[in-house]
Image 1: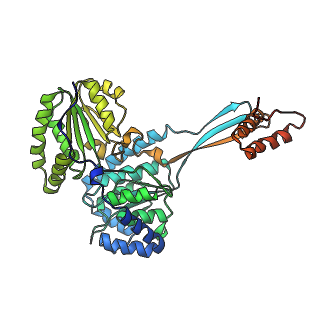
Image 2 (image 1 turned 30 degrees about the vertical axis):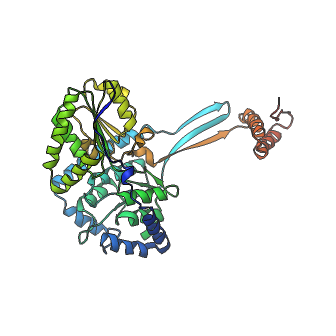
Image 3 (image 1 turned 120 degrees about the vertical axis):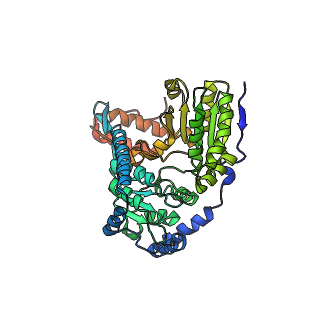
Length: 435
């Protein structure tokens, strides 16, 4: 049986690509040349904001006072989960050393980057969870300075709940700047900030393009496209829950793909009836996003069996992958390409997006085939070192000289020659590459 597409997406993320490169290049160049004043000019233009860029302690306290106690408890709960998971991840990275040959010791050190810039979206939605995910992991990693940057709203500033989350998670500065100007300020070290060594966090297409352009001058977590989600479901799945989960992710944006892969045609048919009904029941803005995403980007695929389902899923390499099927251990062992995996009906992408502890900054657009998402590891540099006695380096020097001459790199070879001559003046060595 070949795969049957009951619904095929007429559009892809590539077909919706917007020519933003020129705009972003111009803004970045303007801000790099014009510094703080030019960044403020763009803030007034795009954010329609002329308040403090760096929030004062008094402004932070005032914003925190506006956050309801129940919401604070929820943010505290999510922060604690993310922090403990990040601490466990960090424990897997250790300094090591080994004796390569007698007298020659090599090792690795794990060193956090100095300054992290965490972008927290705050336009259409206030992404409180993004503040938790990015700032917490940077703090656990040990970054010396963490800037949280979020777009302010006219007359309001940064959303109070984002301020609270960034503050309790460990941000050293909270910056009220949105879009490209915010990314530029962190990268170029404006407003007295240290220059960021790494930029992390989700954002719109302009933020993503700015990070892509700046990559190399500064590290980034990943180049992100629209969020995407895939559900693998068999005949044991609850069609209503499957449909609800698809809709929950489609509301992210008009171009956020959602996919269903199943080996049960009856389940697929039922889900396709339920999804439009569930979308219709959403609030207006959410409804518009979910409707467009379902219409233009969603796919429903019927496969022959679970092996074909798994193979099909790996080809998509989704950002979020949910399994609502029998024998979850089989799926955990078989699946290889995903940003984050949600096994069983009892968990859902929404949990991971907000509060379970795993990170929601994940690879999109098939990038899960070669990388994972944001974690404490992204802020860490694994560097190597070596130390040797003279005797321990003897055989290494001989091999280095020969290999270098074979490659035509005489300067490299002589760096080995002089040491052999100095340390072992009474010995003769064959340092030519020929037999």
